[in-house]
Image (cartoon, rainbow over all chains, first blue to last red; front, side, top):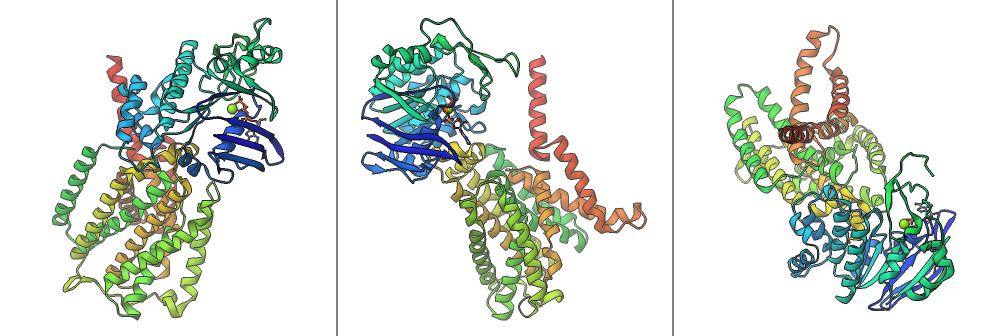
Length: 268
Length: 330
Ligand SMILES: Nc1ncnc2c1ncn2[C@@H]1O[C@H](COP(=O)(O)OP(=O)(O)OP(=O)(O)O)[C@@H](O)[C@H]1O
Ligand SMILES: [Mg+2]
């Protein structure tokens, strides 16, 4: 369905992706895991046309997406739910959903909204509330719901679990699995490797802009390197460094993100 | 700021009634001409407020579009002898097309390049108008522009012009409110909230930014045509850069991304300017009325410090917050 072939992406002189290859087959859930700064977001942005690739090719259902803009890629059936949710904060929940269906001209948009409300009852209750005033978990649900409104064949999620309580993370993963049974193929980017590999069929590990490992979810979970780096088995509890973008420190070996707000700016 | 359809309708009807009643209280032509100016500035600022509020771009060249509307209209009606309506429409089309060309770099560049580009444009426009005497009349101005007419209906006196300009201003207001509340408006508001996310959802943001620029230019051109018909003569001093800046001040004071704010900004600044022009020389000996621009600067700074969202939007937000605080205190 999706083929990423030898993609390299640069920020000026800095190489953020180095000849990356990745495939997603119809009906799969594919996890992409990697540490901060590995290039996960860069890869999704390259696929969805926000960043241009310097080399390589991106093929979706036989058609090339490589040099198309983001507003065109979504029309091919690829929906990207960005990092940190990016809901339209000043617009109502309903307007956010309608924007998800922006390029559609068919009459079924209202039906799809009803369906999305069934999937996320909380959004139904809050449909006239400003999206910016929703809680973090609710905003993530809205971001997914908005992504669904374009009727994507492939849904790409960038760290949907970040900053959410374990219970909500489980809920989000349940929804991801549910979407697949409804016929949507999924590419899931996560730092929370345990949660991601829990729902995925296959996975890729990205390090410093390169794919260093790929395999089935079971294979990756059994891999010693993955366990050490991302699942944290057999290690003492350790706090990650403070993430500048979310201002959170997380228990790295918890698997499930349990995060707290950084106590000090310079805390390690 | 978003208002419900009902609020917009009530406000619109109230404005219509007020405008119908006001002429009865105006005793001299000076007062009527101020009201005509407010209508023209409303047409200008509503477009600029959409551009600044939704496309996030500042234009320092609205005076150019206003001027193009005036000069093209003058040329078509005086030199070619065509009817005023034709002059106004052709001017709007040419000015819109020109704005499109100016806006094309926006398709590629991000950031506030438009402010710089239009600033340069305004300076060039002033020079051209002054130098190209054969086309524009130079410093003496372009003279002999006919009154606006539709068939036998001629808008001759200031009271008749008042009706004409306010009808067109009201049409512009309705049109703009409808745009803001349509699918296009939703897309514009999305671009305003998050440009990247808007693109991810299939909104061609660059296209929309240029479209808003063209719309604001067409509005400006229409206002320019109306000014030319009303005044009968147009001269370069009107299209000076300071006028472009004054329009930005009106929008900033009224409130960005708000059609109603733009109207208040236009009316408030115009009335204040007239007040200062009359009062300032009496208060400060030796102060010429032109020093009103300094007073504007001070007012703008105060508004930006205390009500950065502009007077209308800013005070509405304050009032809502105050009510909410009081409700929760109980
Ligand atoms: N706009 C940019 N300009 C320059 N460098 C950038 C830019 N965006 C990202 N980078 C760099 O590219 C690398 C990959 O960043 P990317 O955001 O793709 O990482 P990531 O895997 O998504 O990390 P995280 O899990 O923290 O979100 C990092 O070293 C980052 O500093
Ligand atoms: Mg990232």
